Image (cartoon, rainbow, N blue to C red; front, side):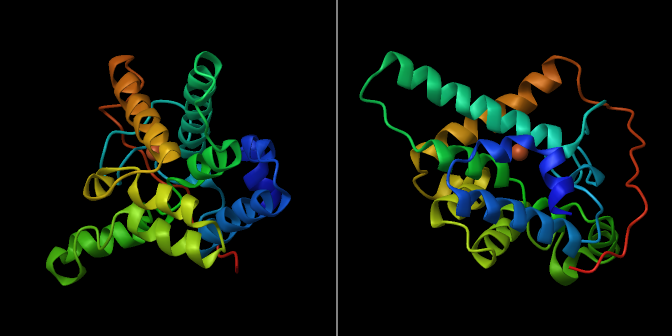
Length: 201
Ligand SMILES: [Fe+2]
């Protein structure tokens, strides 16, 4: 599973700190396996469990694109403004983990259960930022990475985002707005998840 995660998101190798690099890989491997997915790409390639998916490309492609966009923004600012300081490793790790909680929100069995009785535990019971905190902290990832998973989206409007999370927030938002404007989203999608695997953690 670790090999598969690295194949899907080779940008993990850009993280210089060895412990952080391994923890990001392990967190994704455990998260994907715990949900019964075989790969990150088995999840619906969309921003929310019920929003329009990409015509082509996978959820992993979204995440790695956001990581690359984030890094380009940071590098651009640092290139023009010498006093601009950001943490490159945290920028990459946080961006690559920002949607890790989708293994819960996008699990087709969870979605079917929530839709069957929305007032029981909610619809969804929690969004991916909420579940992302659980995964990041359980996996021993830094508080700064957990913060980026927790607050890159609307949840972050209730607090002050870190610098790296501010960059991530707008890179993520930009990705979906440009995807929509560029006709990359499939409004007629009959997207179905692949059959689940029963891989133990
Ligand atoms: Fe995202």
